Length: 418
Image 1 (cartoon, rainbow, N blue to C red):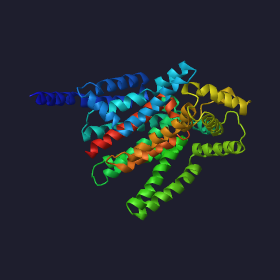
Image 2 (cartoon, rainbow, N blue to C red):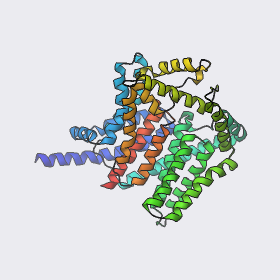
Image 3 (cartoon, helix red, strand yellow):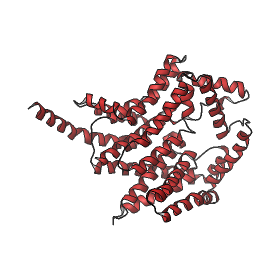
Image 4 (tube, rainbow, N blue to C red):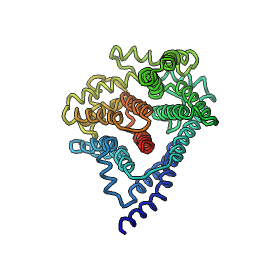
């Protein structure tokens, strides 16, 4: 009798929890672009709802038995532990506040909720539509002042984007939307309706926009996908014709973008100019990639000077500025950035143990079983690559985007696998 009662209670809870979680997924996706406050509130609501059931012990066991969940939480736990040797406790607390979703979202996604295939499709399609609208908003600002914006690319600037003009994170979201729209169109290639054509149009537009925006993270993510497509067709499917087509696009598209899109051309020209300085290890005031390389070298130095523990996450900023003062005394204060790679951030903060554990966290998804392995691999390859030359886990948008996108696609992947 007790078993029947618990079964009925679980069924009733799932009947209201699943639609609410579906609604919260939709809300978080939209709020990401339109309201930071609504995003925070909807994330808190999702975490609360995910724990509102009698099977809490099972949820905790599921968390500890699922490497992708406890692995992602390490990205919070490592900075947490480093507080034991961080002198700047206020800075350490601020970092923990930013990284908190890396702990609470994996715990929330460990909950035993389930969405229908139709609901998962709605979440994916809504994400694609919202990103499409966001790119159109960005393009509106671009065409209104095209000449001056193109010229600004010669000064390491880009066109205006959503996410409070965070073009790095936004470009990765566009790449993710490109991946999802392309794979969804491929899945529906035998359908007779209009949906596959709309998805294909969205995919083509995202490719064009990524080259117009010319943000390194998004552009390289796209070419990682193309390279993956080449090897998938050649090795997995043994289809040389589509593989060769992917290779031709991989080679010819950047050349076409260079000659057809002024923003992309100016971005490449600025990079070549910047490259000439950091090849000679010379500091160029106000440079973009040059300062990034200098910051990565400084982070490497901190890691090796403190190999066992690092300097503590709370003290990375202060210690990195000391490195700049030694090696580049003329460096502008505005150029004194954190190490421009998440690998170096975790190495500087927690030494070689932290750097190796960060590498482990990046590898875990590739050994995680989901139904659609190929797009899952591409998604995580682009995420891991972005952290080589970016510190997305040091800003609120970046933390949420990484955790939410990866965990959402994981949950969808294991749901479809069942």
